[in-house]
Length: 280
Length: 280
Image (cartoon, rainbow over all chains, first blue to last red; front, side, top):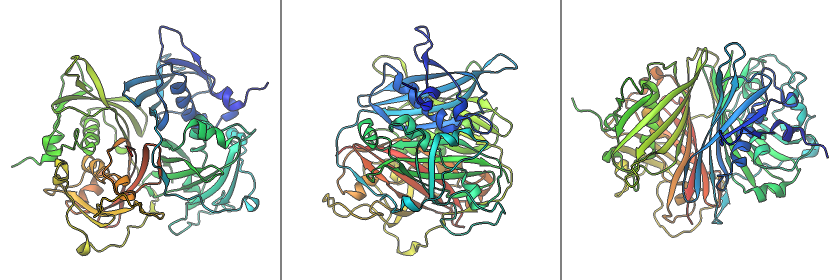
């Protein structure tokens, strides 16, 4: 049986009993972005480290990942510490480190926090109905030649696909930076918390849509809230998710992005927010 | 000159040269909530600790605060470490601790991360125009007798104020949990990053609006992105901010809240998101 490239990218080995919170991994060429790994895999590695931990209580409900530096290709270590365990919630502090090739020092490349919880059934409701869109009329599959990770997803925009003309002509209106798309792993892979955390980061930079110039842009920090259990995610199987993303503000070098992801049944499985560096 | 109660709540003393990242503070009765300090002050203390640090680069652009445990009334320490400093951004890991009265151990009560950045002027735009509302017709000032912190704000809802009837009759529609309000410190205090971080947490639980029952609810994690410089915030002076908040999903014990805050000039100064525990 072949291992899915996403699971290969997330493969972690325990560092040993002297470092019970630490796992060792290697960056994946299959999910390489322009100057480092796809940020979605970095978020997924944080989720994986937490979910591998023997002290884990419950399942992820919140994840914040701060991209402190572009990773180099190669080995990394990730440490996930349960800094506080309550009756039904648990708080995690996560750090990813690499050895600086120049100095030989271990340096922080990513910080993250996560909250896991043992959920109980309760009154539940959505206030964000899934947009009604027709997949048959969606645009072509998204791929960026020099971003290998884009080939590991099947992403098709119904609205707000990549600009046709990189002419810098500013799109106007309150939804100028809105993208609506379908997304699934390629090859298909059953949905779980790790892949959902990655898909929340699978939208191209909003600045490119609002003002079509291929300026440098990169996520600085992303926060994702999970609104489903692992059992509910597993029910989504390998089906597409419907994703939506838009910016609220572009201000002197940083814009935000707010995003939602629904499964085919219309369940809002995750909401996500990120702040992104851009040059202009 | 009197010190504003907010500055009193945020008063931090350096722990000394042996602990250059640590500050000592005390919880404020003036900002007490039902079972601990108002979470907004906790967020503001994280901001303050970062901004006091001699190694600070730039100004806050992102803040995530995880409420690991309700604080006890009394002393705390807060540690803010610059874990990575780049050319124009800096990543902070923050922990707030208290002494457990039973065991005498120092235990984590709050974790946080922040990103600060030296911004450069660039092309900027908003995609979230301020709602057009008339303050003259807003509701009465919000106050909760048993939540002392509510008396430290002047909050007036134009829409989505506290329910009149706690009858559990579910509000329906895509904006069922939407609140729009004006907010400023009481007494008035010039806006800064710390007070903005606190105001982002000044909305009462969305579950109470969607389903009017006073069930227990509390923020688990909040993330705020700042879309203004300290100079721009200072220009807002003591004027009201217009705040808007709504939930996107209520799922088995946790709901999310997405929020925006504009100054009187219509500048979107912050966007914020939180995940909130609720019982039902």
